[in-house]
Image 1 (cartoon, rainbow, N blue to C red):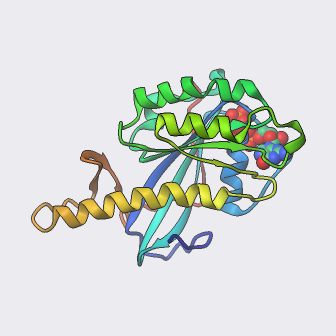
Image 2: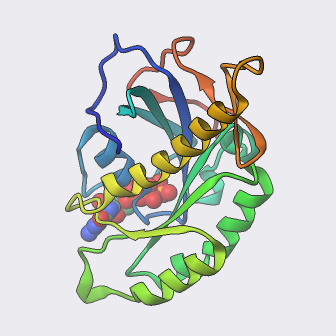
Image 3: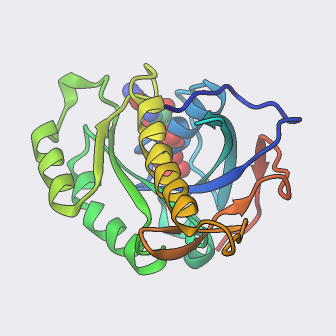
Length: 225
Ligand SMILES: Nc1nc2c(ncn2[C@@H]2O[C@H](COP(=O)(O)OP(=O)(O)OP(=O)(O)O)[C@@H](O)[C@H]2O)c(=O)[nH]1
């Protein structure tokens, strides 16, 4: 359903959806984002310090949607203020590394943090990254899928290196958000016309109105904790 390239600054925007990337240090969050937003990958990626975000604009059902994707440090000491990071997020990508069991074992903790700080109806996808390293695999796809089903999460394995499933992971989350928001707008009908807010499954959640917000394609924010 989703289509779109890497951004046309003159384009009119109907919705901005904020997504957050979370997971342990080194699982590949920054490279997943880089692959999605710029179709780039780097082997000597530096650990993220503070918060960064990048955007990509897509067309969904004749509406233009700007995905504003936030990336923060997996390392505790480099993390920015948690509540600010999650504020207004309507989607989350929860990432582990298929070659490091510990990063999968920490997923429940990340989920707890997410559920403690984000909107309770946030759309979440569990991502097992580095699927290209099949010979070093430590987590089976079945175990991860079972966990995701139990927790009500979408699930995909990706390779930021080989560009496998990165597009699909983002479009899965964005399509789900778009469908929820669109449905709500239809049900709400006239009279409730609050253009800058929408609901995800009955709970009010802020969707940043399009044209009011101009976001550079790559933006570095401050905020060391
Ligand atoms: N083989 C392989 N390596 C990857 C993949 N994605 C990321 N990497 C490598 O894994 C390392 C860590 O990637 P990052 O994207 O910096 O990890 P991060 O989760 O953002 O780390 P923090 O910023 O510390 O939280 C880098 O050397 C990447 O090149 C992948 O899909 N396959």
